[in-house]
Each structure stands twice: as structure tokens, then as C-alpha cells.
Image (tube, rainbow, N blue to C red; front, side, top):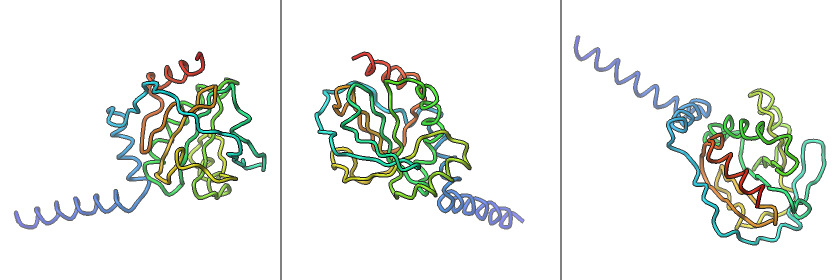
Length: 189
């Protein structure tokens, strides 16, 4: 009888691990739980800003409107690279949505959520299904490696002078008050 209980326990544990590994939403759920306990807090110290040269870096939204980062000087630019199939991307989406809702009516902060696959219909359907409000784009030009090397998710923020002020590769909780204060600080600089 003891052997049967042990086998049932092992089967349950193995099944749970397989679900977490194979089902993106299950993995995102676990990662989101780890975010909530503070494991994935982004470092928000303002480092020495780096000039990147934003002119010519373009993104297209779902309606076909093209935005050139070089035209956004004077605004804080929040740029996030993500994909619908990426569990860490899915895990941080609720915090990104919270941050976006906080600043969406602020004309001094621009948000660009760039689908790394460039499949705007699929990305739009994902946002609709998850009830996220995030404005999605796809890259319309090459992206310098200094900004994005292909690690998902990647978040970069440019200050009002167009300088790279923040870069984080990997999962993070962007709804944290420290991060909101960081954005406010960049707005005032």
C-alpha cells in the first residue's frame, strides 16, 4: 500500500512539472507568483545614459501607422520586446499593463510593445483574449544590438533626450512603486 501511495505521489509531481514546462500559461503563472514575492524586481538606479541614435528606428502599429523613435525626443520612451509564445513575457504582462494604465494618458511617456515575431494579428488577438490594453507594434527597421539582442523579454527606456537610461533582459515586475517613481524621475529630468 505504501508503494502505491508513493507511485501516485510521483506521478502527480511529474505531471505537474510537465504541465509547467509544456504549457506557457502554467509557466507564466508560476513566474508571476515568483514576481509577486519580489524575486523579479528590476534595478531602477539611473545609470549614466548612453546615446544610441534613435533616428531611423521605426515601428508599425496594428493600423499601419509608423513611429520613428528619433521623432520622440522630449518624451520618455518605454520599449518592450516580447512574444506571445514566451512564458516570461506572459508572466510580466499584467505588471506591464498596470504600468501602462498608470501612464497611458501622460503625453510625456510613450509605450511601444514590440512583438518580436512581427505577427500583429496574432499579438492583437492575444491582447484581446487577455484583456490587456498595451499598444502593440512590430519593428519596421533593423534594431541595434545595443537595444535588442533577441533575449525575450527585453525592456529598454530612453530618457527625454533620447538616451538609453534603462535596459533589462528577462522577466521583471514593472508595477512596483519604485519603478513608477523611476519613470517619474526620468520625466522630470
